Length: 148
Image 1 (cartoon, rainbow, N blue to C red):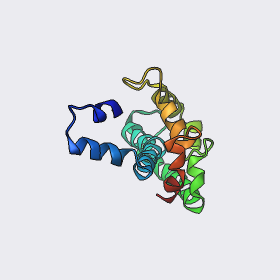
Image 2: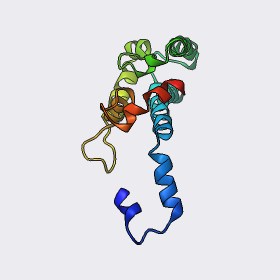
Image 3: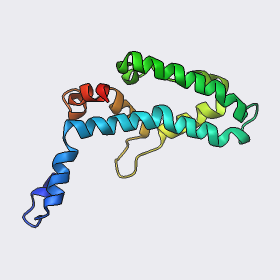
């Protein structure tokens, strides 16, 4: 992208502006927070809600228990935002223990390859969002991640 922005043919002020905005720590922090939200909360909860009728020994009524697990996890994050960056933190650990289909779905989700990114998987994305590469822009954005 940098080569495209600096090439003589690129007179597009919008391109240059977007490149500048998207590389700033605030935007990097926002992307990390959105990634954490997706993989740690949104996708698991959506899968459980959408799959409740198809699972054995599971029903929509079990979702009350799941919401209690999520609430307890969110309270931990509110008390200590750095908890969200801990690779051991898992709001859905108890659900994964009780529901093998959920555990398998999560493993399959994280093993999926990213399109156009070589051998990287969603697990790599989550790992980088939680524990960024030392010296990277992701690491520089960590204080803002905790603030958001």
